[in-house]
Length: 265
Image (tube, rainbow, N blue to C red; front, side, top):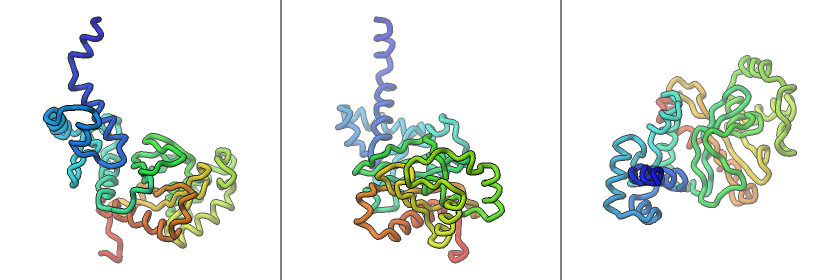
């Protein structure tokens, strides 16, 4: 068939797409040997393909010689330059942290009354919920969204509530989702005191998440960072330590974006 001949005329493109799919779904940046083994490709072919994909910006090589999705793909998706930088620095910061394999790490932006997921690294153990880039959830139910709202000054928060009053809020996703302005204000006060937000089955039954904010060079909050795990696994950890991990990783991303706290100045 003519279609088959046309498809077979570009085998390198098909291999490249298979590589991208594999890298995207991997829990850790795979090595060249991993790619060759899992896709059944000759090692010489794999090394040549990976080198070209890195050269073209389709992949990036990590300090540990693994491969992750490159920023050029984000450009094609149409993300703004600052968002591409944010996502890239998120993954760079993750490379410098250990002990996070059991958690799903997400990065979100506040858009209106929702958060949109712009980056995600899944845990090795798996979660009952599937996070994906482009997914949207009500900000008031999520740890990352609540953390961002808590960083607003009182005037900005009142303006946000005027734009998005409780009458316009979506139906609670679980029995634990916040459903009133009073409840949200109370939650924000707690977040401001301890420095991080908590979603304890507010979005999905059986899912727990700690959220903290990411700042740019000027100190402006640009994103929320979440560390998620199964609710059943939370008892293995100290809650404060999980919140501190979220804050530490968020601070690392902020530092890569040029932010310096007053104490660090």
